[in-house]
Length: 74
Image (tube, rainbow, N blue to C red):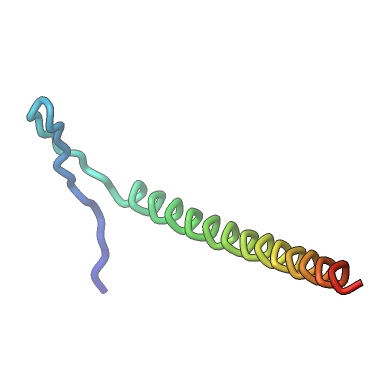
């Protein structure tokens, strides 16, 4: 099995033209992976909550339309 033990990034600033090497070792890579996973989980949870809110709004709109139709018919 092949694993990543370090990553070297070339980081530059377009205004100044300076380029630096930044080495990310295994613990930093693992930490970044955990943060990424946590972000995905947070996004999934936020999406589920948004779907729940949208469902409640849809139901409220249906109820308002029903009451409006009843008021027009009476």
